[in-house]
Length: 623
Image (cartoon, rainbow, N blue to C red; front, side):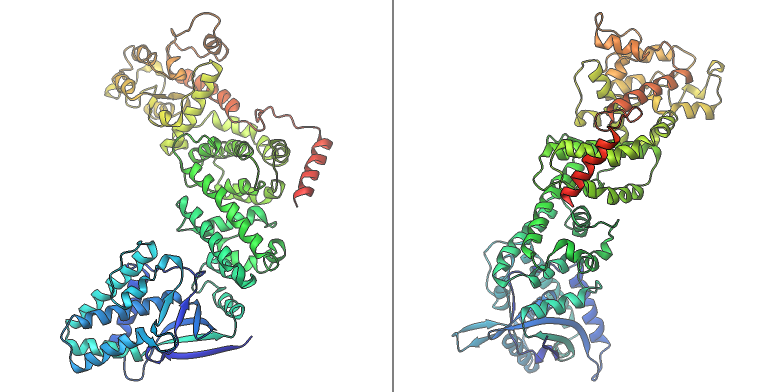
């Protein structure tokens, strides 16, 4: 590999550069990287002497015809051009001294020169990616731009404005001070230009220089790794598909953390040895991952896999984050409630399923994961333990296409894990306080799921997430007794009373208007519970409505059968009734959150030999 390294000041730069269309667009932000650029330059200028230089960084280039393609350093190089545009325009706006006039002309010549071969002006840096729209050329020649304003153009304009403001501030100390800065900028700022003989060599240099995370994250490194292994004729196709990958990630508002997608994608499809950390992604890809991914021989196939996975990832992230009904992946929406909106662990197993499997298969697996997260949440199991399990289970789900295949894999993994915890879950649930299920949207979701299971058993309409999340959480035993008086008949002191108030069995969902009415019934010396019951019966919620012991519907109805079977009839409300209702909620929970359609405390595994044969066949087929 032939490499030539050249240290050059800005005034020494005589090459003309092209940023190819497959490269990353301008992404530096005015209040972030550009601000830091200005600060660093300003500090170096204020402390400079005749012998010192300021190293700005490196630029990796490869010669192409009479110009040089920029492989790395395009953000830095573009910002230098924007700085010189700001200097040029500011000098043009003032009455210049002879020295300032000379620099003004020098800047114009540096930015663009007349090419006698082509009989046209040639700009020092030309951006070929679509998002640029030749905007840099308009700035160089100070022409009005009337085209589409892309995010890249917005960032270039913001960077230019920041530079112009900085340049103007230098003039406040006199024109000679500004000239001193221009002299420093041209002659004391240096870059190292690393010149490779060919594109693949340049990309390899880029890969090596960035492996340790010195400048780019793994997402950029993977992109350039793919380009380094692909044929140049495939570059437009790769660029187009990569843009769609990035677009999918941005579509689910994950653009600030694309490595999360890359990490779960690799763990779901390729990694067989546990959790892959973000900081280890690139190292893993070029070592253990190389024979598994086969990106060297099939770079296009790898891009296609990234694209299809990003499409599913985007849909699933959006479903997880939706605080409403999602027709395609309702179980994924539920996971967002039970495991928080920002939860992403479940995506590991869902991404492992066959790329062409039906949505119902994805949702079926999500339903099993919803149960797992509910049990884990109830038991207080930390998220890191679930992720560790998923990383070990993922191989059983890779490439599965049907619900029947998923059932087999679930039985070997999730069912085996959850059923061992069934007894502990039941015991823990019966002593659970409602505030253990905070935040409030999670508590509403849990109470709403129990409500819908009761409604289903009573042949009553189910309620959607939007309605459930609009409700208030009512404490049946009042949180604040009137005058803080607790009659002796309750047999508890204030501390014990408070413990009963916050039991899960003591809370129910209630419409706002009804909840406001029952808040007035907190005199424990009076018939407070009967007063509340008279309001509860007006609720549209089954579990709240049936707190009124006089409530019934017809004869031999499902509702009356539910009241009888679950002993859901209360004439008073004390500790005994709270515990009784908590037991009812447990029974409903065991019916609502199941594994492969079975209660976790009554799960019957298929024949062990048949189970082992089926799973081995599935795993063999997809590994």
